[in-house]
Structures are given as C-alpha cells and as structure tokens.
Length: 394
Ligand code: PMT
Image (cartoon, rainbow, N blue to C red):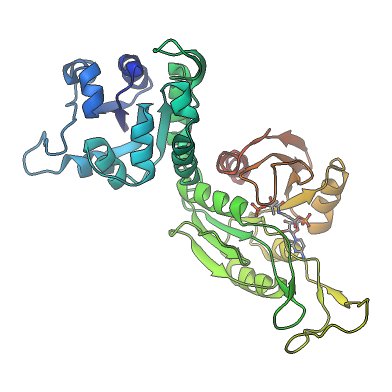
C-alpha cells in the first residue's frame, strides 16, 4: 500500500480531515497524519491514530521509533504529502521554506507531489500574501484544490470552504498516478525567445519569458523524466534538476538541441524562435543616418522541423504555435510543414494568456483531431499537455 502523509492545519474544517483520511484509505493508501499545534487544538491525535492505525505526529521532537528521525522517514516513504485543510499561515510557511514544526519539516524533506486544499475566511484567502504563497507553491508544482464558495465557519460568504472530499481525493490520485508516467523518458524542450544580433548592442527578439517552458520542465521532472532545456535568454530560473543549455540565437538553439535529439523520447518546441535574422551583424554600434533604414533579413532554420527529422524512431515531436486568433487552419498547416505529430496552439491575442502571462490555454491538434484545455495556470497546463503526450508515447 503506498503511504501518504496527511498534514492537517488549524482551520475549523479540521474535522473533515477525518473523513478525508478514511476516503484515502479506501483508495488503498496507508495514511499517516501530522497535525500542526493549532490543528491539535481542534482535533485530537487519538482520533487519527484510531482511524488510521498509525501514529499521529505533531511535535517535531516526537519520534515514534527511537533513534529514527520521523520527519525524514515519513518524507522518504510518502507517495504524496496532502495538506488539508491548509491555512493561510501554513501556506505561507510552506511557500517560504520554514521548518518550524513537524509538518513544515516533513515538507522540506519531501521531494514528491504536494497537494494543498486551502480553507480559511474569504478575505484571508484573497489576501495578497496568501495569493503570493499559493502562486509560489503552484510555481513549484503543487496541486492546489481550490476552496469552494459559500458560507464559511465565521458566517461570512465567499471562497474559502474546504473543497469536497471527492475533489481532494481525485487530486491526490492524479498527483500520485502522475509521478511515473514519464519515468525513464528523456524530454528535450526548447524554450524562451531567441535574440538575433543587429550589431554588438541591438538584437531582434520577442516577448517570450520562458514561463511555459519552465512549467513543462517542472511537470516532466515530476512525472519522472530526465529533462534537457535549450533556452534562449530569459530572466527566470529552470528547475535545478533539469539540464539547461543557455543559447542566444536560433542557430545556437539548433546546434545545442541537435546534440541531444538522438536520446530524446519527447521533443517539445516551446521556444519562440525568430523566423529571420539580420543578414549581417554590424560590428560595434550602427550610427543613426537617414530618416529611414532597411535591415536585410535571412530566414533562420526551422529548429523543431529539423529536430523532427533527426529524432530517433518512436520519438514524439511536438511544436507549439502562437496564433493571433485566426482559427486552427495555420496549426494544421504547421503539423504537416514541420513533420511533427502534434501542435499545441495558443491564442496570443487573448489578454492575460500566452507570452509573459502566468496563464495560458491550449488546443492540441493532431491528425486525428483537436482537444482544448481551457484557461489555466501554465503549471496545470503543462501537466495537462504532458499527460496527453505521455499517453501517445505509450
Ligand atoms: O515563454 P512564455 O512567455 O511562457 O510564452 C510561451 C509561448 C507563447 C512563447 C509558447 O506557448 C509558444 O506558443 N511558443 C511557440 C511560439 C512560436 O514561435 O510559434 P510559431 O508559430 O512562430 O512557431 C511554431 C513552432 O515552430 C514552435 O514550436 C517554434 O518553437 C518552432 N519554430 C519556429 C520558427 C523557427 N525558426 N524554428 C522553430 O523551431
């Protein structure tokens, strides 16, 4: 039976954690419960010990087995860490890497999927610091089961009620199933923009931030893959477990990606590669002269099409397409022109979606049809996409 750690923090919704523990056990998990001090004032460890047949921890110095460090043992053996209910305080402590009680100490030592089910007063849920903590945790790959709308314990209305038990269980099943669907696979991603030099100080580029590529790298690692990212210049960091090759131009991106393509099982072209580059790079700094000026451009190689032609047999090669809302015709054309098995289309004309944004929406186009994701965070979307692609890999 896979182990789960259920962390319970101090919200009135604590009492529902008992039902959650039971349901998770019905799904075949062995559940060990860890209470924060505040949770232990709402519910007793004895309740969870009786329900689960396992010790329930709260104090960081409590060691059910003498000479063993419980926070490490629990973190190593758990298939997922589920925090339900997760209070604003616990979310902020998790987001900032505090280890000031048993639950946060386990979380720091834990390397698997983290499922969070917040519950609190709606104003606390809306508070900037809570939103920042949730954003930070989502960025790191946590599954967040959004609280429901309605009347909360204090009598106020709004979003803050602990999500339903079936919703939390579904997220745990998704998070744990997810863990190995790309195990043993090598995922090669291109990400970010390219910069094509005009002279020594200027370049042609675009607004790609690398967020979508970083989200895919994180999700692929969570799914057990080895990940290589060939990235144009971006300000953000990629996960430390990924191999990251930094490049500047489309030509450099092609060369770096080609040196990894032979091993790759899944190749995804997320990068916004410049279609053209200046024919000449002027030395130094071009001086202002006439009122108008023409730049000669030459076409860059198509990186993803070249990778598709060099991929090993059975590898799955996927392009992204940034489309300004003109339907899916261009995406079907790209499917053929680039020789890829799928094109993930995002409509970059939608405010708040696509380049630079934290959210996106994709339509995955293959020869057999289309499937749309709906709008979601890039982290969730990355999982959505990789689950489908992992299914294609077989
Ligand atoms: O980085 P973010 O800010 O998070 O934004 C993400 C994104 C919007 C850049 C990303 O989701 C996306 O849509 N990436 C592809 C953007 C793009 O260049 O689309 P395209 O339609 O021009 O290119 C189609 C495909 O061909 C892409 O896979 C692209 O990587 C590839 N291509 C294009 C030209 C070229 N010379 N070589 C290529 O490999």
